[in-house]
Every structure is written in C-alpha cells, then in structure tokens.
Image (cartoon, rainbow, N blue to C red; front, side):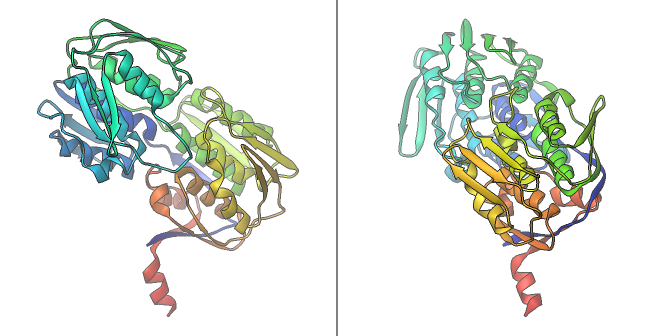
Length: 427
C-alpha cells in the first residue's frame, strides 16, 4: 500500500505550476468519440483518471498515442458502440460521458453505471431526462445504462430540475450530431463546461451560451478533428493556495485563470491571507495565522464543493468559529473524523459543519477517503506539528498530478512510500 508521509511545520516558498483541468479532461477525452478525424488534446493532466479514460477509449477501438507527457492524439474513426470494460467504467464517475458521446455518434449506447468518489447520492435522472427528450429509449438494468434513439436523435427543449454539471455535459455530447436545435435551460456554468463547448466548437460543433443558464446546440452532420488545449485546473490551483495559507509562506501559483479563482481568493483574503493576482498567476502570502470565516458551497460562480474539505483544513487552524454549509454534495464530511485525529474541533449537523479553530494540529495516521478529502489531509499535515502518514493516496492521485514533487519543490517535507517497505525497515 502506498502512503504519503509528511513532516509538518515547514513554510512553503516558490512557484507551483498547475496542470490541465481534471474535470475538463475527463469530458473532452470521451467527446473525441464524436469526431471523425484525428484530435490532438494538449495540457492533459497526468492523473490516474485520465489514464483510465484513455484505456477506455483504447478498449472501444480508438487509436491513442501520447506524443509527450501532456499531449495525446486520439483517432476515434474506427471505434464501435460496444460498452467499455465494466471494471474500468465503474472505477470513475466521468465514465458516464461515454453514454452521451456514443449515443450521439451511433444512436445507441450501453455503459456500466459510473463509480468514483463516494459523495452520497448522485443520481443520473437528469441525464436520462435529457436523453429521453432527444428521442432515446433509456433503460437501467444489470448495472448498465442502455440508451437507443431508434428513430435518430432530434433536438429538444430540456429544462434541468437542478443545474447538474454531468447532465449538462452529457446532453451537450448527445445533441451535437442530433437533427435540429437543442436548448438546455438551467444549465450548469462551470469553467469546464465552457471548455468542453469551446473544444466541440473547435471541432465543428455549433454551441452557444456555455457559461450561462441557457445553452443552445444546433446539430451538425459530423465533427472533424483538430487541436485543442485544456484550461488550467481551478481546484488544483485552489488547493495550492489553501496549502500556502495554512502552512504559511510565499507561493506563486502559475498557469491559472485568476477569474476562475475569485471566490477562493475572496475567502482566503477574508481569513487574513494576502493574495495578488497577475495575468496567469496568483501569489499567496501567509504568516500562517488565519481568522475564522463562513463558507456555503454553491454551483459556479459560487464557492466550489470540490474546495470545501481543503477550506475546512484551513478553518481548523483559524482563530475563532467558522461554519461550512454544504449545499451541493450529500456526503462531503467523511473527512471530518480524520481531521479530528489531528486535533481539529469540528461538529457536523446535517449539511452544516461548525469548526472551532485549534491552536495547532498534530501529526497522526489518517486516511484519504476521497479525492478532495485527501487534499485536505495533505494541507492539515503540512501545517501540523510532527509526522502524518496518509493512506488511500490512490484517491489523491486520481486528480492531482505530481503532487508530491510539486510540494517538495516548495520546501515541504513529503515522501511517497510503500507501506510494506516502511514496516520492513522498522523491523
């Protein structure tokens, strides 16, 4: 078992380069299924979710070639509509984008129910609603979702009962090659939705309104190939900002879009951190002394639920009482028991967490129960006194590329080790 060991108490200093956006990459890569020509995708993050998605594309007949560590060429002209391997598909949430992409290209799709982090009930009813509105017959049985547009897919007006990111993306994918106009009302507005729309438009799609409440897609007969670069990762950038705030120091986070970080920047400034914005970077200066604040997670442009655990780690060190209200995910507080092992004072009641700032946190054996919880464990460990061992790092590596090397470059004392080797050494 692989673990991270962190000796806390060291201030961070230097530059942290942010990779491509995970949430954009895992939507854009399956979108290549819709393209008749070769697609080159640049700035892909080096994370396990991307590796899994590329394996899935290979398994259904796509030609996939990594030209360097952050660039991939995909030729999906020879793929079939057969489902991805069950174990691969159920290992990640974003595998369900293959349903929209395959349905859009072939008029039918059959894929395993998705997996990913256990964040509570995350139904796909809005996805199914959209597919059915486009004319598809949809069934869920035996662990699979099957959709078929027996008479082809036809554009429709689709109102989402909630601004679901996944449903917005899947309906966009399914409707790009449908006949007529599709209108998605109450669409999600996250940056990676805009990035997907920009990618599809670069391949020949006709999508307008991404980033607003209403997205209009005029169906095309085909999409071509081309080259596209993925946007920087908003959450990776925010995680480095939170780490610098908690541990203290002077960190410049580069290759970012500052506008995407405005809600995170505003909250850190409220907590006493100095944040300077540049064209494609933010500089975070912190003495490690934070003041309490309140956060309510909301769809973009509100505070992202994917930054909630990292902010909780910061609040555990802040003077005074902080409060988090989680309004997006059902089960985001599983990390709380792990922070308590390190001395955090957190009380959870439903969707609300009250955090009494501790004078200090102390190192302890903890576990990353999901991707962003793992990031919170790292942040807390960097600020804590003593040594922390983090298990479950496979979750962290689903969404953070080279996290150990990047933090070591900032002066953190962090190691990636095999647990059995460590035991043998102690023996």
